[in-house]
Length: 478
Ligand code: ADP
Ligand code: F6P
Image (cartoon, rainbow, N blue to C red; front, side, top):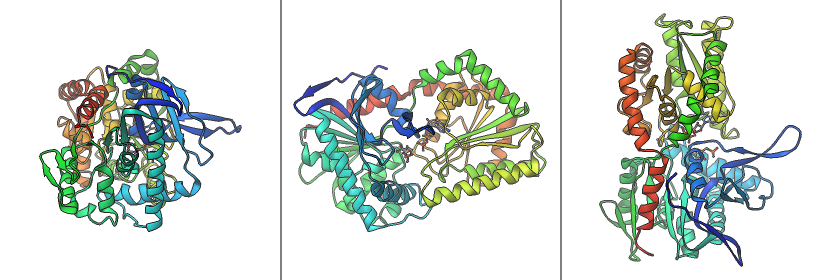
């Protein structure tokens, strides 16, 4: 890592840091093992994947939830980071996390793929929990510190934090899409959230279109003036808003991919599922935005049409359990599992399933072995801020083999035009693209992968963090 290092030191208030990350989750979740012992496990999702290496290098403080409703553990140090747990009660989890964050904002910001619910008690909980995070950040940040707030769960924190600590430089990065005016304007608390975000000096988005949506909304709903990427506030502050496409630690993944034991495991995986000619792979949180059902449906139709046989191609779908108490997620799990059962019943053979479905979290080394085993990576979200899985696959294909099928609606599609791009809503196109990927000439596959890897290596997570943080450092003093 090459990002500048920020130290931590002690004051009368406890340890304070000159670089503070605030995110809903800590990079590790507190989990109870079957024998009752408490341990820490890596938290799910792309935010942690991207921020973990940045924080290890910068040795800052990370404020977040430990994933349980117990009393928050005392702050502790882990891999050079200072982790500061914030408590969420069972009611907070229900109303702030499962409710407002994941049943209001998540579907609204992802093009209303599922209908968002608007509930006033959820909004109140969102305000209270955002205040708790802002107060925790105010306690931990040293005088003049850089504070980097992350994602849709904490959009009010920048404004709340600035009110307590005007000395700080505050950045905000949204990991998910930011919707157009027509959708955002439905939100009953639309102005409060815009004001919350405008508490930051710099607001970052995954794609330029999301930044334009935000700038347009500040004009339309708040009447503020904007010029290019700048918003002029009535109190004289200037806030910048632009895109910073997030990335991954390419070197770390490539190093794992090159290990002989990884190659051995990739070979074993292929043997275990009946040594098909081609392995297609999907790896996602089990989320309705990811288009898991759409891709399995298209694959099943190819088998049904006789255009593919299970000897020729098999599908591995890894789906990490996610937000399991939210109704839409429970329904999705039932739908996907029913579909996989039907496809295997119709097309699977003994020792040769058509679809291998794994509803579990995996060690990083196992995921990399899967990426190495996969001839075709199928990433078909209906909407996705970026999609780091697509980048992880490219990082692992150091020998320039493998084919990426990528949804036009993932942020990653802006960067990887050489992927086989697809509209996942169009089942016939999805079928054609899967066949094209399976049958792609090796030379053409290598040409595509080489170009994608060149771009990825130059645009890794260091570059993302450095460009955001250097722009934040240069932001106009409050
Ligand atoms: P999101 O942030 O919506 O979850 P991304 O694709 O951007 O989506 O990031 C997902 C991250 O979670 C990736 O780093 C991926 O490797 C990781 N991941 C996905 N599935 C699993 C799994 N079954 N076990 C462990 N990590 C997983
Ligand atoms: O990257 C999107 C994101 O929602 C992160 O904010 C979040 O940490 C991750 O996906 C996983 O979701 P959750 O924290 O709800 O399990």
